Amino acid sequence: MSTGTTGFAEPADTPAPARSSAPRLLRAAARRLLGAAAVLLGAATVAFAALQLVPGDPVTVMLGPGTAATPEVKAAIQEQYGLDRPVPVQYFTYLGHLLTGDLGESYQLQRPVADLIGDQLGPTVQLGAAALGLAVLLALLAAVGTAGRRPALRALSSFAELLSVSSPSYWIGILLLTAFSFQLRVFPVAGDDGFAALVLPAVTLALPVAGMLAQVLREGLETALGKPFVLTARSRGVGSAAVVLRHALRHAAVPVVTLTGWLTGSLLGGAVLVESVFGRPGIGALTLQATTNKDLPLVIGLVLLSALVFVVISALVDLLYLVIDPRLRTD
Image (cartoon, rainbow, N blue to C red):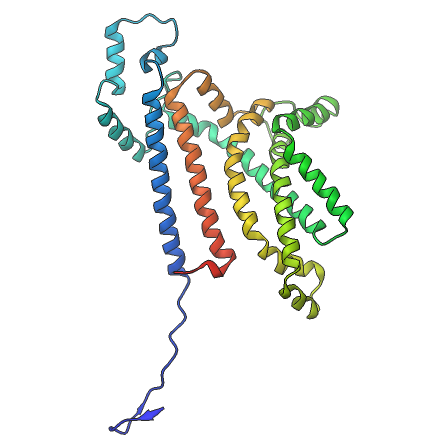
């Protein structure tokens, strides 16, 4: 503290208040949203270009093979769907419809694509959420239960994980159906009626994901358990379980979050096979029907849905990094 010519004491320098991390999180969220919008625009553009480059006349596909239609009828259909306009006009009209949530109308089913996807999205989301939750639980149990334990136990767990990762999902589904539906008759063979019908499809999707997550999480835990902060925690009397769950697990979580985000998006593709094996309704059955019938608007709508899922999950994973590891909250 010093005094000036006026005789009053000059205030001492005070430290600047700590900057809140909230603005940084908001800026990070804004950057991710802009990136997501750019990715979705690119996916929409590629989807539109694919629609233009597909061989054949869309009207012929719409009418179906072997259908005789006069040129006047085809011209009326082209006008109805805007196919008689120049390609740039079609493109900007297409983008304008996307901004309002209009994905067009299915050629074969004559219903809005958004309605068709909305009707089938629920069972797929239910299946994906159940599979992801089960996969994370199994991975945590396997990794936490074997990290830093006897080599024989880790080797046995690693072998089971490798087997689950290497097995195709449809093969796992057939084995589970044979054992628990045809032999033991514990679970229904097909359908989506009740919780029992969800068990086998969810396990089929979860096992390969759980195997991959457990391998990465175990490696991260064993690396974290060798760090100095673990020795410090143990020297303070912290038990082994608390060291793993309260300290090491957080340090091992970042690569697992990355892998979980990627695998969550891939569950949408895996649902196509699993829903077919177990006869469940959902996006998988709708995708199979759309590709078989060459229903281009519906196929493009499903492609955009997949892009949206990956973009949203990627943004959530990036934001979750900032929550898990404060060191990443830089300007």
